Image 1 (cartoon, rainbow, N blue to C red):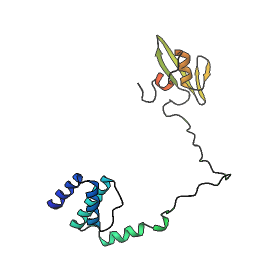
Image 2 (cartoon, rainbow, N blue to C red):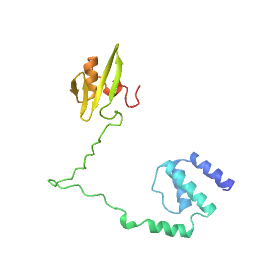
Image 3 (cartoon, helix red, strand yellow):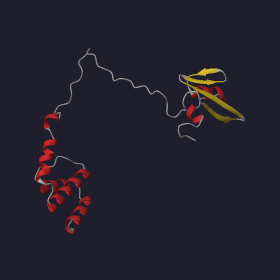
Image 4 (cartoon, one colour):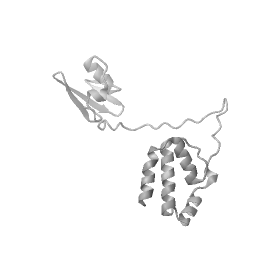
Length: 160
């Protein structure tokens, strides 16, 4: 790239939005519809480089036109659903197993106030001292007497 183009591109950051809009219109030959400074800086810099270096080849332009099928571009937003119309709800994806937990059948252990808290991981919950619990938080509450995040209490999921 020529040094004169490099210095001109470097000066674009110092221009105001009005000055950039005017420069955009000079370089592109079309009216400026944006007031976003970073966008204008990038577009003007690209056009300056394209004019200095030659821009895209004619083959690249034709290929871009082939790829940009304007029939696929939506011009208007989709209509709002009618009152009383049934709207399909997205399918709920249920994870088989929380990746922070060991597989079912394994134990989660943690020393707490001089005793070892051991929890058996089950497919549908947890077992602690012969009782079943739905969450690690319920077990942590039973052990500590106050609400504690179960993953934090047992130091699972990258938390220390």
